[in-house]
Amino acid sequence: MRLFNIIIINIILLLTIIISIDLIMGQWLKSQPNVFKVPAALWDKDIKYDVTELYESNKKIFTNYTRDGKGYRGLNDQTEKDQILTIGGSTTDQKYVSDTDTWQSFMEKNLPNKFNIINAGVEGQTTYGHLFSIKNWHSKDLTTFKIPLIIFYIGINDTGLLNQGNQALTEYDNLYEGKSLMRKIRISLSRNSFLYAKIRNAKNRFFNLVGKIENNIVWAGHYNKSEPITNPGIYKDITEPKKKLGYNFYTKLVQNLILETKKFFPNSKILIIQQDIAVCKFESEKSVWNLHPRAKKQHEDGQSYCVDVGKVFMAQNHAISKMEPSNRPFVLKLYLQNILDDESIYDFIHHNKIGSQKIANALIPHVKKILEIN
Image (cartoon, rainbow, N blue to C red):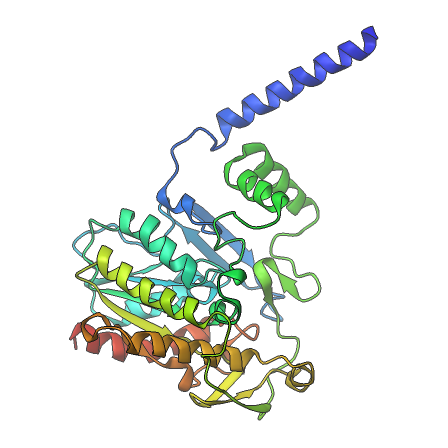
């Protein structure tokens, strides 16, 4: 019994020491930036990724990924510059493309020097998350800047919302209200715990997991293609989205995103970019070719990702057309231009440096027109 008591006392003391260290060294008791409220968002990061395998390259390729203390990529604190805020998911964030090679960076280099373009992309985030970020992050951190334009580069993450409504909200977007208690705990530890971060980094270094591809997948659902996109692929018609379970939920969400953005940034113009997808070649708003190498198998299994994305864009257009003309944003149907091809992407969704340049080149004329600059 005495030995048992000694063991218990020592365990309690050890746990007390561990908890005390973590409370002092971690983020539990510290003031957090506004971006902390946004699940999956990152801040105060300076990471070098080895993307050699991801890019299927014969020579080593490293990319630099940074986020400042407010959670932004590319923010210039020189207040004399006008800011263009860009919001979206992983194709806005571009985690595995270097800071100097994002489409925002290429745009900034090719617009007048008075503009600084901010990257506020968050991996996996949908329109639901963008709305939350406008209210709880951007409207609190960017009030001192002049922001003539806000760009939403969106669409591909919203298919679940259109198909299933609020039932499809991901664990990132529904602000920790997901079903998995363990996931909530892991997210909380990863954001606050000093010791958890040290142990995880040690494990990654020991097992060589940082930037390493396992079964063609690297962090956060990024794949290498393993085979090129095919042409012509499988042809599909795109029918009206109004019968989708989440149609009313999603169209209202799009309208709320626009109205809330105008509320918090009344002097900013809004541009919605209906993003291009290399694996989906749209002939029109109502027809698409699925160029995925396994398009035939997807078709046989009843999968229709390209069709679902097309319906998202249709639903967005329906939502915008029902708004008061004074509230309607500018819309660029980039997906109809089919600017991304096999050389532009490292997987079937995410673009590389070449893709960044093509996106920037496609956006610049529209941004200049909206901002009335030469």
